Image (tube, rainbow, N blue to C red; front, side, top):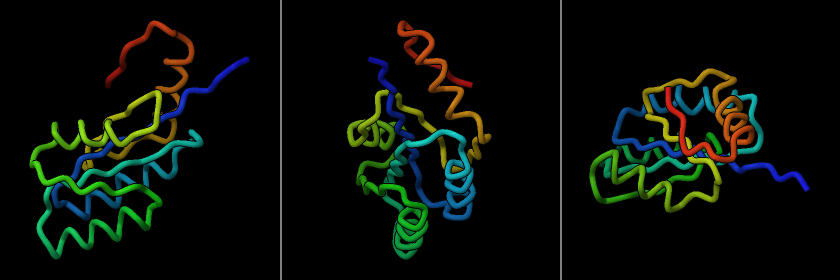
Length: 119
């Protein structure tokens, strides 16, 4: 029986709501289906945190608030919250190409010994 690997995208964010919108839009236009998106806000102060929440939930992503500042801690928290077999870490100022997530998944499904890819 063939199984398909589940993909989780983890995105740390601290402020930068304008960049976040573009990054989430690029992910939504991906050719890969299905996947989950977890945005980890690592302590953005109000009122910007409220705007980030609105953007994330409007994009159909999961929002996790994390008090410990820093992208590394936010990535770790997002990984802990994820349900995917494949974790894709993307910063909030990166707009992925439509094919990127599918190419990552294809690479892992083609090589069971593969531990990671980056680019």
